[in-house]
Length: 109
Image (cartoon, helix red, strand yellow):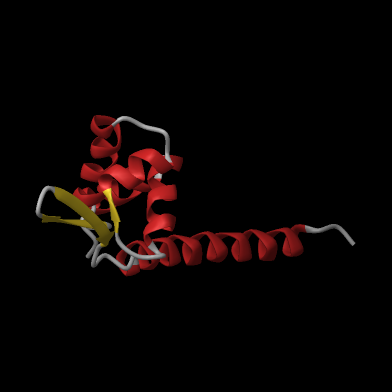
């Protein structure tokens, strides 16, 4: 069973366009927090808050090398979230099928 706190942290992290942009940028490879701050025209504390939320959701990992902190994509491949969405999608499709059947049964000739 999916833990809702896990889903909450992932969806909260993905809710912000800056954080989604960070994830997209990291698909090209690791980036320093300074590079990300410059790319998104943000202060270091501002980008660090975004990175922290992405880390908490397991979407980003950070590693310090010398005085520089680098970010990479995390180990969360969103499988858990995709399964949750598929389950709800199936439920909605089932309801729509039942509604269509009901409407067909009650349609006047």
